[in-house]
Length: 358
Image (cartoon, rainbow, N blue to C red; front, side, top):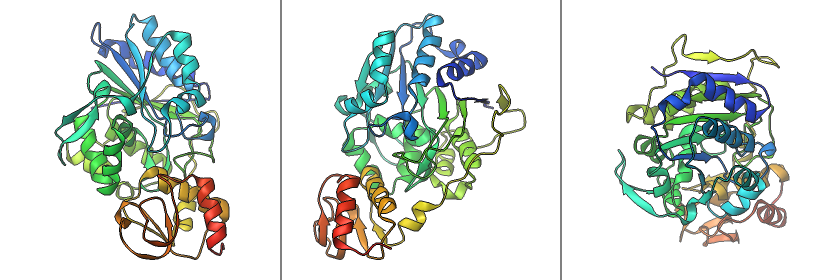
């Protein structure tokens, strides 16, 4: 059975070291193994916005590893479709961490891939993730406008080329995420839950949650994350699918949650606001990619919503739509904002020009 270690506080660097020391992580790393750190860097934004892994998590992990003799360390990530990983590295402060510790940063958008069998279908996965001697997953626990929540399992999607990410959305997202977890299994997961945005995966509405988690079972960690956010297993289907496909176990028995300290601001975890569901009532999504959908949700949030029908997603390619189309895929909509993806600002201007906001 697996153990989840939980620590409360706000100092990501110190908290990461404390978690790794308590879990005796070094004892599980093979001698001479290369270690790859895979953060959540979905967008180019400061971690304080609630979307990306704090730089202190990376510096803490690197410092712990170096103090225990690990020398071959790298940071690997590929931001979401339409954004620049290099720009995201700089915005999150990872370039400074890399320089301080002489650790290279690799943009997986330019990485070679290898086809790997999964319970769903063969998938193209980036080689730097597959070939790491010890892969450490560093997700953020936060909300997601399509999957309700995102943490350990979905963070592995950043180890895919953009073409595969688009295919995930064409296939409904849930089954591909679960299947990837059965094929790509990080040895360790350290969760940044210091100030995640509990509604929007690209951040902007951070909520102080003041804790971090460490464990080896991504399914167990995500199930616990759901519990913290007040979500039931059926609300995040990829967790149960991953469990059925042998990626881990959602069970958390008594004694398997170990707290290193007491909560500083109370143990009660905040709940998502439910804003996304309210804002997207008029949205007709068909296999929409995360970047495009998230930009639409952000624009709707800024404008206050709409009572006009909005189409978005790959499933609308070539399909007539008597309404508003968002993104390049909605090329046959009556009115369209182009882009792959269009920015939230572009969609906002489009909404103001073409529809009546509530």
